[in-house]
Image (cartoon, rainbow, N blue to C red; front, side):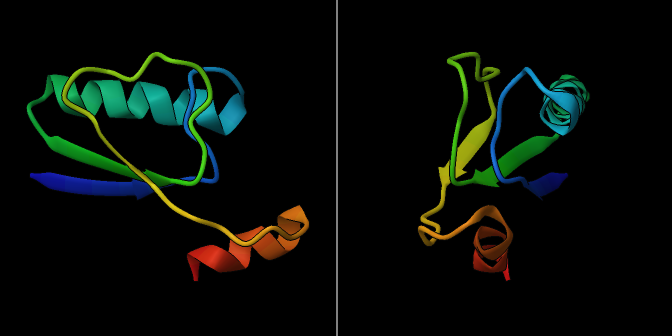
Length: 70
């Protein structure tokens, strides 16, 4: 199955970022094709097989950057 996920940043540390990294790893282990759309990658540990798509976001305060995903 092809699965697309998005987050304001992708990495292995942090609350929701760590949860997303674990979710991605488990989906890949089950054989799914996973794509993550994000404007920022933190760290250099991208699991093999993961497709990361970097997005451009507006240079605004955090609450306005979220609107870039709309």
